Image (cartoon, rainbow, N blue to C red; front, side, top):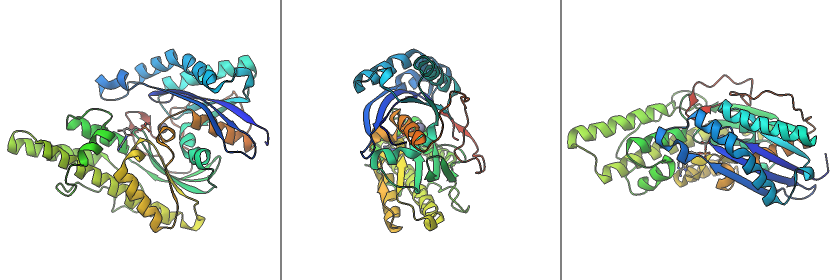
Length: 363
Ligand code: KG4
Ligand code: ZN
């Protein structure tokens, strides 16, 4: 399809209500005309995790306005669109349904093509929106909800090489912050503390290194941190500021090292496909220590390292609109006849991942 495509994207699978308009003109780089993201951190803060009912209600209340703002900021009306792309899963089903119902209604009212997009495909195709890289490439998704290695072979062809069997790394950062009395989201606060700490003071486990392949596990790390904290409390009656910094630094170093080792293995597994890049997505990719280690591993394999701008690494609707454009261009037919799915693995042939995080199913 070689005509200009302007798509509205809608995302509501977790705790961000998002709408965006993306345009691709043949021969030009894609343009993000608008990208609205309404976070819900404040609504869930008191509960230590995303509460599905609260999330679904907030999406239902905010989606209309979010779409109106995205269209207004892009300077387009519904009639100027060539289609609508909506996240149809995986995620918290109440939220997914809110987005899908709105998208179906708009598409039916204006007779617009509708594309059901897998949220993980949205993340995985983002490096083509931001940097136009060629297939295949290796993608590491590391957020509060996801953790997996994907070989992205085409618009609709993903090979999952491995992933977490329990918590996602962002979840581990958030739980660490909670255990140490630091504010949420835990990633940035733990990283800031870690900067002043000694990463070698506590020898936290590096889980699953003895297992071949690139599956990961983070729940044991959290337990080890809890034990180390409690041992200090039992001995000293509390933890000092320096103890806290050292705990954060040692925890972060364990996460970074495990991610680096597993990335090294994943790159070795796909070496014969000559990947065009190692790309990362997800909030954890904002962590400088983790990012630097991944970049070093990538350089060792002679593969360019790519981290899209943070606002496109974390949940947003521009990635959903873009995935819709990619699918239309690849000749995949739009259809309003699809199910909203809480689980939707990108790679049906890969063994199911265990567990589902506080932000919903991981695959
Ligand atoms: O991609 P994201 O915004 O949302 C989803 O999880 O879907 O990622 C948020 C997660 C949170 O768990 C947060 O603690 C983590 O990413 N995060 C970080 C950092 N910034 C955010 N983790 C480690 N270091 C950071 N600097
Ligand atoms: Zn996501």
